[in-house]
Structures are given as structure tokens and as C-alpha cells.
Length: 495
Ligand SMILES: *[C@@H]1O[C@H](CO)[C@@H](O)[C@H](O)[C@H]1NC(C)=O
Ligand SMILES: *[C@@H]1O[C@H](CO)[C@@H](O)[C@H](O)[C@H]1NC(C)=O
Image (cartoon, rainbow, N blue to C red; front, side, top):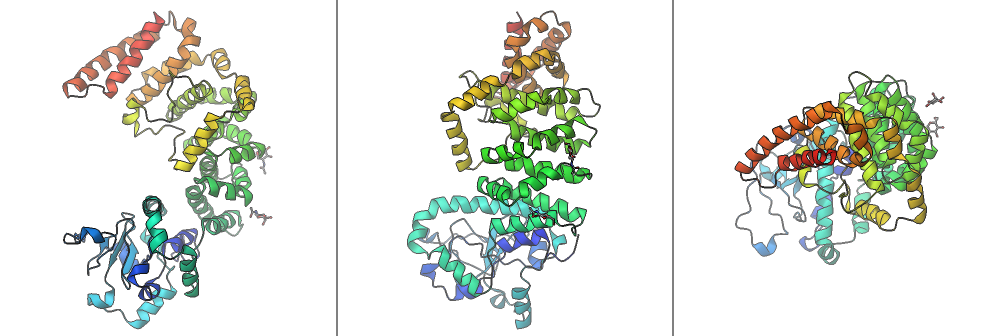
């Protein structure tokens, strides 16, 4: 990787963060402060040092004036919505994702030379990419975006009244030749980077890694589609480089999540076949994991894709994963996928929405549900509305998805019940969930299955003990009690 980030994909993102603003601020009176822009200047030294310095609390600040930030010579964390007085020095702390501000250097006794300042202004994007990882940046950016969103909602009204329109600000930035890059522009660059034959393998992987961040957003994913990026990552699934396959599947899965338009385009672009090929052939585990993630995003709430999946022998492909050595980590993900698909098809009151936070899912942080991703409110609305007015056509399509009969026919009943032997509680939780919904169809198979009775008996005594302990600790409706309940229900139903 190059040391100069000026032209690397990472820098494209940095440019989002890095706006050199003091000149604007000094012309800005306090009444028209800049509310939410990333008035952020990153210096190499800033990225490496800091975090040791305690921010000084603003104890004697007038509560009426909470919106105003009072800079001192120390870096202090900016709260969402706080406005920075003219001339302040603002930066993004890449370790915490917080924005911080203080009085400018010259008043800080350090007094930069004029030349240094000029250099920084000109080289504002020239950050040593080795001083932070792509992950750190990603995290910082995500956090920043989150807080900006919250900020926007909380202060929208005030902002409208108090502050100048963003367009005006942008014009000012442009006058200063400081460019705000849009997500669209950044994605465009990343796609070119990925597509360019001049890019190294590392650069391509980095481009995909960064793209994954952007395509989570529904609108970005649509742009990604119209720019031709989706087709490129689908082709990337064919790459001879496992690491490209892996990251292509990662981007694909992110773009597909809760995005019907992308789902349709992806299946028409042949993504489903390619994912199944990856899962059916010898591949590194990391590649299969991401392919499974993409498959899940492809199938969720998309009955047409589920139908195609069954037609193409997708279930047999997943079944094959249970025969290969070293794929154990994938088994629970498959179980979760199947459970989600069964439950989404039959949204009945006795089955909660699998994406709703379940009482006993709180111990599963180490095992995030396969299909879950952070959804923005608009994504949730979109998904809810899809649920609400399920069109007749969609219901019709769901009817044609003969998932459960195929599961029974391929003897998944036994495949699933054997997984009760897994040692992790959260893995068992998923297996018990699937067993619960399969029970009605597998009962005959399960009756007289001694191994299963024995496994259930062991689980019962284990969870009785753990639940009792939990209760002694004051947790009346604990995780283990839930698991015990699931075990008991299955034992009862086996009768
Ligand atoms: C990728 O590169 C090829 C060949 O240079 C070009 O024809 C194609 O339009 C590019 N695709 C995208 C999406 O940029
Ligand atoms: C990609 O893989 C598919 C099978 O999934 C194959 O039919 C196709 O020829 C491959 N394309 C390239 C360009 O390798």
C-alpha cells in the first residue's frame, strides 16, 4: 500500500472529513455558526497522539448556552449540535470518532509558521495512510455519520432558523477550493479503482472494503447499481483470487440487504448461481462465509429468489456444507438462514419477527444473526411497508416456495437435530429455534430417535441448573430459562 494517501481510496473518504475551515469561520459571526459540517482538520500528529488528554468539562457554562462550544487550549470533545466559535481548531479524533476542538495553535503557544499552515491547507488530503487503518476510519466515519444524523433530527428546526442553508456553505467551501465529496463521487472513484487493470490486488480489495461501507445505504446501493458497480462485483465472484471473491460477496451482501431493487437486478445478473458455485466448491472458509452472507441478503423477503434457489438446488448445496470438513462455523449460519426463511414465509403471531430483538438474543453478540445489519429508520420503514402491503403477487410467490417439504425430503430433520451437540449456547439457541418450527414436519422422524432424546435430556439438565443459578442471581426471565423453555417444549411435542 502506498504511503501517500493522496490518491488512494481511503483518501477519498478522508476528503469527506477533512475540511479546512478556519478561513470560513473567521468570517462567520456567532449567530450564523456552522452547525453540523465536518469542520475537521486532521493532522498527522493529531492522528497519532491525543486521547491521553482529558477534555476539560464545561462546568460553569450557562445551560442556556449549551449549544455553544467554549474552546480552551486543550482538545475537547464536541457534542452533537454544538457550534464552534470562529477561528477554532477542529479535528476528528480517529480513535473515538468524536470531533474535538480547541483554540488555534497560534494562541496555544506553539505558533505554526506561516509556511506550515499553508502546507497543511494545500496538503489537507495528504495523510499518512499508515497512521490509521481503514477499519478505524470506517468506524470513525460511521460514528460521525450516526451522530450527525441524530443531530440533524434533533436540531433540524433550530438549524433552519439559525443557520445559513447548506447550499450557501457549500458555495463558500467551493470558493475556498475545498471540495465536499458526495457519496456518489466517492463510490464512483472506488468502482473505477476496482475496475482498473492498473490497480494492484491490494488496491482492489481496499476499494471493495470501502465500497461495502457505502452500499449499506439504500440510496447509495441504487446509485451503485446505476453506475455499473453491482455487475462488477457479481463478476468479481468469478475472480480467481479468493480474496476478491470474498470482498465482492461482502459488498454484494451489503448492497442487497433490504433493497428489493438491487435484489432483482442481482438475480437477473446471475449472482445467485455464482454464489451457489462458491458454496458448492472448494473455497477458503472466509469466502464461503461472505458468500453465505450475500446469499442470505439475496433471499430474505424475496420469494422469487427463494424459488430460484430451490430450483437451482440451493438446499442441496447448503446440505453439502455439512459434509465438508472444517465448515462447522457455517452450520449455524445455515440454520439461522433456514429459520429466517421459514418464519418470514409464515408470519404468524407465534413467531416473532426474527429481526425484532428477542428476549433471549441478548447473549448472541458473538453470533450476530446472519441476516441482521444495522438498518436506518428509512430502511425499516421500507421493510415494514413491504410487510404491510404484501401484494397478492408476492403472497402467490411465497406459496410456490416449497421450502419445508424440500427440507423434509432431504432429511434436514436429522441434520439439524445433530447440531444440538454444539457446545455454544447461542448456537444451540438457533438450532432449537429451527427445531421448534420443523417439529410439526419432522415429528415422525424424531420419534424413536434415541440420540435426539438423549441430547435433549442432557440439555434439559444443563439448562435447569444454569437457569436456577441465573434465578439465584436475581434474573427471573433469564437467557437460560428461555433456552430451558425451548428444550422443554420440544420434549413435550415429541411426547
Ligand atoms: C470497467 O472497465 C471496462 C474496461 O476498461 C469498461 O469498459 C467498463 O465500462 C468499466 N466498468 C465500469 C462500471 O466502470
Ligand atoms: C463465471 O462463472 C460462471 C459459472 O458460475 C461461468 O459460467 C462463466 O463462464 C464465468 N465467467 C468468467 C468470465 O469466468
